[in-house]
Length: 254
Image (tube, rainbow, N blue to C red):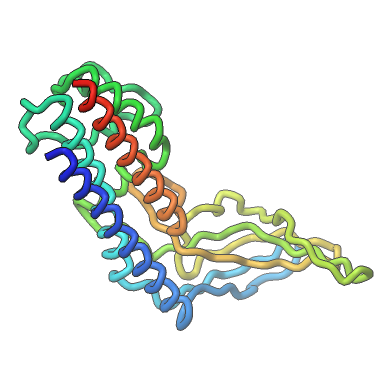
Protein backbone atom coordinates (compact mmCIF):
# COMPACT_ATOMS: atom_id res chain seq x y z
CA UNK A 1 0.00 0.00 0.00
CA UNK A 2 2.80 2.43 0.89
CA UNK A 3 4.58 2.09 -2.44
CA UNK A 4 1.28 2.53 -4.28
CA UNK A 5 0.69 5.78 -2.40
CA UNK A 6 4.21 7.01 -3.14
CA UNK A 7 3.64 6.23 -6.83
CA UNK A 8 0.47 8.33 -6.65
CA UNK A 9 2.42 11.15 -4.99
CA UNK A 10 5.01 11.09 -7.78
CA UNK A 11 2.18 11.14 -10.34
CA UNK A 12 0.84 14.30 -8.68
CA UNK A 13 4.29 15.91 -8.89
CA UNK A 14 4.46 15.01 -12.58
CA UNK A 15 1.01 16.48 -13.14
CA UNK A 16 2.05 19.71 -11.44
CA UNK A 17 4.83 20.07 -14.03
CA UNK A 18 2.24 19.77 -16.80
CA UNK A 19 0.31 22.63 -15.20
CA UNK A 20 3.50 24.68 -14.85
CA UNK A 21 4.27 24.32 -18.55
CA UNK A 22 0.67 25.29 -19.30
CA UNK A 23 1.13 28.33 -17.09
CA UNK A 24 4.26 29.37 -18.95
CA UNK A 25 2.47 29.03 -22.27
CA UNK A 26 -0.48 31.10 -21.04
CA UNK A 27 1.83 33.85 -19.77
CA UNK A 28 3.85 33.88 -22.99
CA UNK A 29 0.64 34.20 -24.98
CA UNK A 30 -0.52 37.12 -22.83
CA UNK A 31 2.83 38.91 -23.00
CA UNK A 32 3.02 38.43 -26.77
CA UNK A 33 -0.20 40.36 -27.31
CA UNK A 34 -0.43 42.57 -24.22
CA UNK A 35 1.95 42.96 -21.26
CA UNK A 36 3.01 46.03 -19.28
CA UNK A 37 4.63 49.31 -20.27
CA UNK A 38 5.43 52.70 -18.73
CA UNK A 39 4.91 56.29 -19.87
CA UNK A 40 6.81 59.31 -18.56
CA UNK A 41 4.45 61.90 -17.13
CA UNK A 42 6.71 64.40 -15.28
CA UNK A 43 10.31 65.53 -15.64
CA UNK A 44 12.28 67.59 -13.16
CA UNK A 45 13.95 66.76 -9.86
CA UNK A 46 12.48 63.31 -10.24
CA UNK A 47 11.02 61.46 -13.18
CA UNK A 48 7.54 60.01 -12.79
CA UNK A 49 6.37 57.05 -14.84
CA UNK A 50 2.85 55.69 -15.07
CA UNK A 51 2.43 51.91 -15.38
CA UNK A 52 0.11 50.68 -18.11
CA UNK A 53 -1.31 47.14 -17.88
CA UNK A 54 -4.04 46.50 -20.39
CA UNK A 55 -5.94 44.30 -20.36
CA UNK A 56 -5.55 42.57 -17.02
CA UNK A 57 -4.43 38.90 -17.27
CA UNK A 58 -7.26 36.42 -17.64
CA UNK A 59 -8.79 34.34 -14.86
CA UNK A 60 -7.53 31.27 -16.71
CA UNK A 61 -3.99 32.00 -15.51
CA UNK A 62 -5.19 32.03 -11.89
CA UNK A 63 -6.95 28.71 -12.42
CA UNK A 64 -3.77 27.09 -13.77
CA UNK A 65 -1.80 28.29 -10.75
CA UNK A 66 -4.47 26.80 -8.48
CA UNK A 67 -4.23 23.44 -10.26
CA UNK A 68 -0.44 23.51 -9.91
CA UNK A 69 -0.67 24.23 -6.17
CA UNK A 70 -3.39 21.61 -5.61
CA UNK A 71 -1.25 18.85 -7.16
CA UNK A 72 1.78 19.72 -5.05
CA UNK A 73 -0.26 19.82 -1.85
CA UNK A 74 -1.88 16.49 -2.73
CA UNK A 75 1.53 14.94 -3.43
CA UNK A 76 2.70 15.83 0.09
CA UNK A 77 -0.50 14.46 1.64
CA UNK A 78 -0.24 11.21 -0.34
CA UNK A 79 3.41 10.79 0.66
CA UNK A 80 2.54 11.41 4.33
CA UNK A 81 -0.18 8.75 4.15
CA UNK A 82 2.33 6.36 2.60
CA UNK A 83 4.85 7.01 5.37
CA UNK A 84 2.30 6.35 8.10
CA UNK A 85 1.10 3.18 6.38
CA UNK A 86 4.57 1.94 7.39
CA UNK A 87 5.07 3.64 10.77
CA UNK A 88 1.47 3.78 12.04
CA UNK A 89 -0.70 1.36 10.04
CA UNK A 90 -3.46 1.55 12.65
CA UNK A 91 -4.22 5.22 11.86
CA UNK A 92 -7.19 5.92 9.56
CA UNK A 93 -5.79 7.31 6.31
CA UNK A 94 -8.69 9.75 5.92
CA UNK A 95 -7.39 12.01 8.71
CA UNK A 96 -3.74 12.14 7.63
CA UNK A 97 -2.21 15.14 5.91
CA UNK A 98 1.22 16.73 5.69
CA UNK A 99 1.85 18.87 8.81
CA UNK A 100 3.02 22.27 7.57
CA UNK A 101 2.94 23.69 11.09
CA UNK A 102 4.37 27.13 11.81
CA UNK A 103 7.27 28.28 9.69
CA UNK A 104 10.68 27.88 11.31
CA UNK A 105 9.31 26.14 14.42
CA UNK A 106 9.03 22.49 15.33
CA UNK A 107 5.58 20.99 15.72
CA UNK A 108 4.14 21.80 19.13
CA UNK A 109 2.39 19.39 21.48
CA UNK A 110 -1.08 20.01 20.04
CA UNK A 111 0.13 19.64 16.45
CA UNK A 112 1.84 16.34 17.29
CA UNK A 113 -1.28 15.20 19.14
CA UNK A 114 -3.44 16.02 16.11
CA UNK A 115 -1.22 13.81 13.97
CA UNK A 116 -1.53 10.95 16.47
CA UNK A 117 1.46 9.15 15.00
CA UNK A 118 4.62 7.58 16.39
CA UNK A 119 7.84 9.35 17.32
CA UNK A 120 9.48 7.74 14.32
CA UNK A 121 7.00 9.37 11.96
CA UNK A 122 7.29 12.72 13.73
CA UNK A 123 11.07 12.63 13.31
CA UNK A 124 10.77 11.96 9.58
CA UNK A 125 8.17 14.67 9.12
CA UNK A 126 10.25 17.23 11.00
CA UNK A 127 13.14 16.42 8.67
CA UNK A 128 10.81 16.92 5.70
CA UNK A 129 9.68 20.29 7.06
CA UNK A 130 13.29 21.44 7.49
CA UNK A 131 14.09 20.26 3.97
CA UNK A 132 11.12 22.17 2.55
CA UNK A 133 11.86 25.37 4.45
CA UNK A 134 10.31 28.63 3.16
CA UNK A 135 9.07 26.92 -0.02
CA UNK A 136 6.62 24.81 2.00
CA UNK A 137 5.45 27.87 3.93
CA UNK A 138 4.55 29.56 0.63
CA UNK A 139 2.94 26.40 -0.71
CA UNK A 140 0.76 26.17 2.39
CA UNK A 141 -0.27 29.82 2.10
CA UNK A 142 -1.14 29.38 -1.56
CA UNK A 143 -3.07 26.20 -0.89
CA UNK A 144 -5.07 27.74 1.96
CA UNK A 145 -6.01 30.74 -0.15
CA UNK A 146 -6.91 28.63 -3.18
CA UNK A 147 -9.47 26.79 -1.05
CA UNK A 148 -11.45 30.01 -0.61
CA UNK A 149 -10.69 32.25 -3.59
CA UNK A 150 -8.52 32.49 -6.69
CA UNK A 151 -4.82 33.13 -6.41
CA UNK A 152 -4.63 36.56 -8.03
CA UNK A 153 -2.32 36.51 -11.02
CA UNK A 154 -3.30 39.92 -12.37
CA UNK A 155 -0.18 41.53 -10.91
CA UNK A 156 3.11 42.63 -12.33
CA UNK A 157 6.26 42.95 -10.30
CA UNK A 158 8.69 45.80 -10.88
CA UNK A 159 12.33 44.80 -10.82
CA UNK A 160 14.92 47.51 -10.32
CA UNK A 161 17.32 47.88 -13.21
CA UNK A 162 19.53 50.51 -14.80
CA UNK A 163 21.86 50.45 -17.78
CA UNK A 164 25.20 52.24 -17.50
CA UNK A 165 26.88 52.82 -20.85
CA UNK A 166 30.55 53.55 -21.39
CA UNK A 167 30.53 55.21 -24.82
CA UNK A 168 34.35 55.32 -25.03
CA UNK A 169 34.54 51.53 -24.80
CA UNK A 170 31.14 50.73 -26.32
CA UNK A 171 30.13 48.55 -23.37
CA UNK A 172 27.05 48.52 -21.14
CA UNK A 173 26.41 47.17 -17.65
CA UNK A 174 23.21 46.63 -15.71
CA UNK A 175 23.49 48.18 -12.24
CA UNK A 176 21.20 48.97 -9.32
CA UNK A 177 18.43 51.47 -10.04
CA UNK A 178 18.25 54.82 -8.16
CA UNK A 179 14.50 54.39 -7.70
CA UNK A 180 12.94 56.51 -4.98
CA UNK A 181 10.01 54.13 -4.63
CA UNK A 182 11.85 51.13 -3.17
CA UNK A 183 8.63 50.23 -1.34
CA UNK A 184 7.20 49.26 -4.73
CA UNK A 185 9.80 46.60 -5.51
CA UNK A 186 8.22 43.14 -5.28
CA UNK A 187 4.84 44.83 -4.88
CA UNK A 188 1.78 44.16 -6.98
CA UNK A 189 1.32 46.88 -9.56
CA UNK A 190 -1.99 48.01 -10.98
CA UNK A 191 -2.75 49.88 -14.17
CA UNK A 192 -2.19 53.60 -13.45
CA UNK A 193 0.34 53.20 -10.61
CA UNK A 194 3.07 55.86 -10.65
CA UNK A 195 6.77 55.08 -10.18
CA UNK A 196 9.24 57.79 -9.08
CA UNK A 197 12.82 57.61 -10.38
CA UNK A 198 15.77 59.84 -9.44
CA UNK A 199 17.05 62.16 -12.16
CA UNK A 200 20.70 61.34 -12.82
CA UNK A 201 22.83 64.00 -14.45
CA UNK A 202 25.10 61.36 -15.97
CA UNK A 203 24.17 61.16 -19.66
CA UNK A 204 25.58 57.65 -19.81
CA UNK A 205 22.85 56.21 -17.64
CA UNK A 206 19.51 55.06 -19.01
CA UNK A 207 16.58 53.48 -17.21
CA UNK A 208 15.22 50.04 -18.01
CA UNK A 209 11.95 48.73 -16.59
CA UNK A 210 11.46 45.01 -16.26
CA UNK A 211 8.12 43.44 -15.36
CA UNK A 212 7.27 39.85 -14.51
CA UNK A 213 4.11 38.01 -13.55
CA UNK A 214 3.48 37.53 -9.87
CA UNK A 215 0.70 36.57 -7.49
CA UNK A 216 -0.53 38.06 -4.26
CA UNK A 217 -1.37 36.22 -1.07
CA UNK A 218 -3.57 37.33 1.79
CA UNK A 219 -1.50 38.86 4.56
CA UNK A 220 1.56 39.60 2.39
CA UNK A 221 2.48 42.99 0.95
CA UNK A 222 4.97 41.62 -1.55
CA UNK A 223 4.14 39.67 -4.69
CA UNK A 224 5.56 36.22 -5.37
CA UNK A 225 7.10 35.94 -8.86
CA UNK A 226 5.38 33.22 -10.86
CA UNK A 227 8.82 31.97 -11.88
CA UNK A 228 9.41 30.98 -8.24
CA UNK A 229 6.69 28.33 -8.52
CA UNK A 230 9.06 26.03 -10.38
CA UNK A 231 11.47 26.06 -7.44
CA UNK A 232 8.61 25.40 -5.01
CA UNK A 233 7.64 22.38 -7.12
CA UNK A 234 11.23 21.12 -7.18
CA UNK A 235 11.47 21.30 -3.38
CA UNK A 236 8.10 19.60 -2.93
CA UNK A 237 9.42 16.74 -5.08
CA UNK A 238 12.52 16.47 -2.84
CA UNK A 239 10.27 16.28 0.23
CA UNK A 240 8.31 13.40 -1.35
CA UNK A 241 11.59 11.62 -2.09
CA UNK A 242 12.70 12.17 1.52
CA UNK A 243 9.50 10.62 2.86
CA UNK A 244 9.78 7.70 0.43
CA UNK A 245 13.37 6.96 1.45
CA UNK A 246 12.49 7.16 5.14
CA UNK A 247 9.52 4.81 4.70
CA UNK A 248 11.73 2.27 2.91
CA UNK A 249 14.32 2.49 5.66
CA UNK A 250 11.80 2.14 8.49
CA UNK A 251 9.91 -0.63 6.69
CA UNK A 252 13.11 -2.59 6.21
CA UNK A 253 13.99 -2.31 9.89
CA UNK A 254 10.55 -3.30 11.12
